[in-house]
Length: 355
Image (tube, rainbow, N blue to C red; front, side):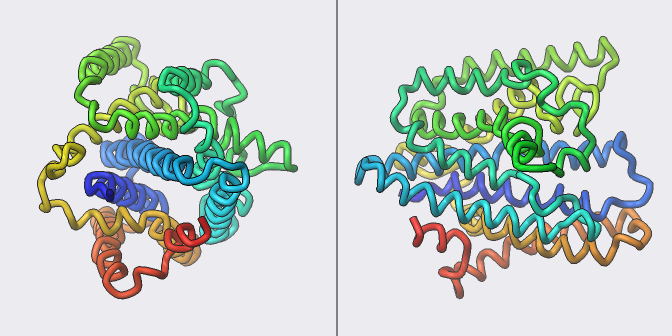
């Protein structure tokens, strides 16, 4: 059964990612990292990626469950895993080439990213359907605290150029697993979280006490930040929450808010009713179903923008704002038109056929 609230969450995640990526490529004049607008934009990005990875983990687990029920042989699993890893890796390369650092972009051609993270998550799929819920929770805790466990290996001393580059296969594996933009440690936390949400989809209300306790911890961290005069959240640097590298408090905080979003949007759909809002938010669903294709395509467009703007002055704030909003919003009607006229032409369809 196709769940509407899942497509809506995926749609929100991809639109938020487009917003933050567009804002990064065309930052307005006079806006510094510490500006409230910059903080708001970074906050959206800080929630978008965890949502995107968690919902992907949900999908990986759900798909792996169906595969286990139909055929549990090694060959069947290889036929399920290999196309996913291949397509996601090729899409990551396409993203990197489109937004190459040498042409005003942000990546080098070999940079591991969120799609290679999802490829690793696909490899974990068969294991996630075979282990117990208690083991999954143990794995989640290990991944959550992995930034503390690996210490300086998480790349806290790396600048952006170093984080997206690698010399040789060993350093590339290091970026993939520990200190790239979306390393397996700790980002596999969200893949496991997605599997737990699918496993407990009809019992999410039971974790409300955990959510309440977690919110107390998060609020306490804000008070601590104020008391110690340490920034509460930064994209990178010295703060309670950091994205590059993603520390334990960031993974914990964003994970809790992802669960809250699931709880809010789920409504009664799992029990046979309607998701929150009924059909009011159905316009998000097409973008959600096309999230992988939109992710790749919006980077191709941003790659052209970055190339032509690299020697130009920054846009004025109102023009940059309008451009960002338009580029984000345009994918909603495009996704709807795509489903109406060319639904078979997408990376999602290729993935379905090869799997």
